[in-house]
Picture (cartoon, rainbow, N blue to C red):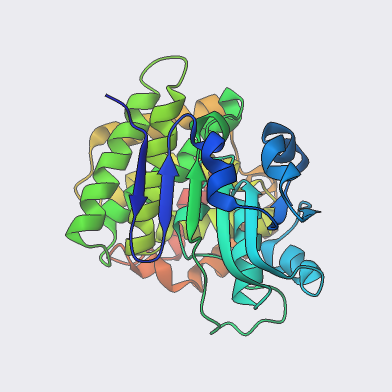
Amino acid sequence: MTDSFRHVDAARTVVFGEGALEEAAGLLGDGYVLLATRRAAAAAPAVVQRAAAVFDVPHGLVEEVAGDLLGKVRAERLVALGGGRVVDVAKALAAAGAAQEVAAVPTSLSAAEMTGVHRHARGVPGDTPRVRASLVINDPRLSASQPADALAASTANALGHAVTALASARSTPIARAVGGEAARRLMDAWAQEEPRRTTLALGALLAGWAVDHSGLGPHHVLAQTAVRTASLAHARANAALLPSTVRAMAARAALDPELERCADRLRRRAGADLGAMGTDEAVLERAVEAALRRPELERVPPPFERDEVRRIYRAAA
């Protein structure tokens, strides 16, 4: 039995499995504009060679990077080759009118390729419709290719998606079912010292689909706020926070106890903490204030309040 598949619905085609990258030429065609990082470009040279133009995506906030690229990028098809930041920049550019469609070739477990969640490019009105990738080529040899510590942090982000789909009041029975399957695969993949990478890649893809149908919740609010307040790497912030946020959500919803144990293992494997938030009280309080302004804290009732948010941040620091 193989986990490889092609799934087609009204708005998107998803091609998954080892060997999916070999199908990229036929699926992507020629003449697309490519967004990539150097690491991603080196891992998929054939995707680079077929592009009409290639733009390197630097580190930085999605809205700033996309804002800087507006006016430079114009394409019928914009291909994102990279992790969540690269895919989100591509979606932001398409939302701003720089491309008619987005295709994604992920190199991490972010599942940004499966969601319509992204920041808008600088200067784009907040009520502008957001964009999903219309073509996803997910080859585990790329999407689960990170070193083990980085892969553990990326898994924490994916498991956060699955837990949100399981616990959110906005979820649906279908999203909860897919979220549950995603969580089982992600936990099973780390049941031994070396992770099973294809299982991780599929679990992350399913978790992304599920959270796209439930909406983000408290875990990602706290992680995103920590990233922006303390200048942290996104996946590592997820890994640092996940044990505490899973415990908080388990007090509100029926969750598998193994989720908390897995979250603890991922944090240890990633070696993750919240950096300055553990030593600078002012940074911690700025993060608490910023998080409390996000309505997603109410999606796993009862709403997360100030003292609880502060305790979660302290426990993750």
